[in-house]
Length: 229
Image 1 (tube, one colour):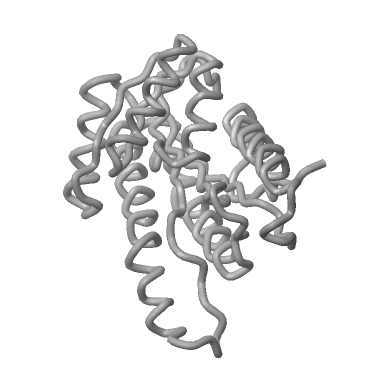
Image 2: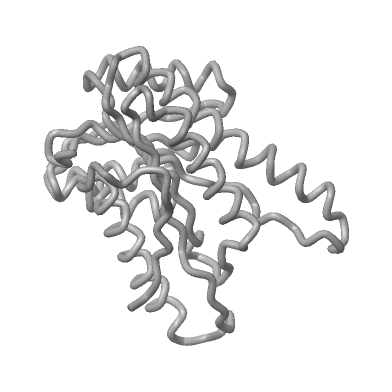
């Protein structure tokens, strides 16, 4: 798939990772639909993309329910035309361990807060691509919040990987590809002075991994674990 001729919808575009991937794809000539629920951070990403000559528009989500997301996708279509790619960002809290305090409540909160929205975007984008006979692509993405030193847990990564494989199998008959990018698990101290630099390098690898999935039409149903080389 040619990035320069693609319309890319990016969820959580105001998040630091969303901003990084938005600016990278903007620099490659893609048309970007930037979505977020936070108007201030969404505007920052939008203005940053415009500053480097990007072709983009911002779409503020007033809610994360299915009807709102469906209408947002239609708004993007009305503005840009056919949507080729969804960058679907996982914003759920990390899954708790079985024996942690309040683990059941934490699990339910994670599913409600992030996983449900993640699933809705995947469903609605796939439905849109199927109805429009589009050879589309969904990239499931998870990473640090980058203003913390936390990592994505193996439980969250396993869930994202499972959904990526399941969706790829279900959507293959409609010529819709699904791939995913998650960071490698590693440990470091929160007060590590190299933490921010490490995050920047990992951020770069995640962005480049997403670009690789777009550019390689054979990549489907698999995950890339981005790591600092």
